[in-house]
Length: 124
Image (tube, rainbow, N blue to C red; front, top):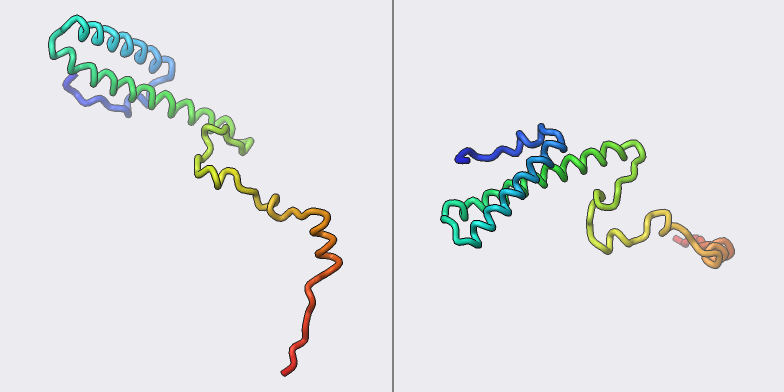
């Protein structure tokens, strides 16, 4: 395991293969943790961090693939699921849309129609 682990290779794999490998890694992590409890050698204890990082990489690739498949599936409808939309800030998400801002109440319409802005001619 001296070689550096490449995520590029993971992206080429199918999701089913990724899930199988992920289960193997989780099993290995459980074994390493039991060795840690039973006062195992330091070599295996150092491997716990590597296995955890590798699990994180697998999960990242799986989530990327899931998100991309959902994006491709909803591309034609134009509406993304909530978890794939941009987060922005709470204020930006909750503010009124342009059409909502442009709407006026009945009273506002009456006032606009009955009392339009006056035009004054200026003397020179």
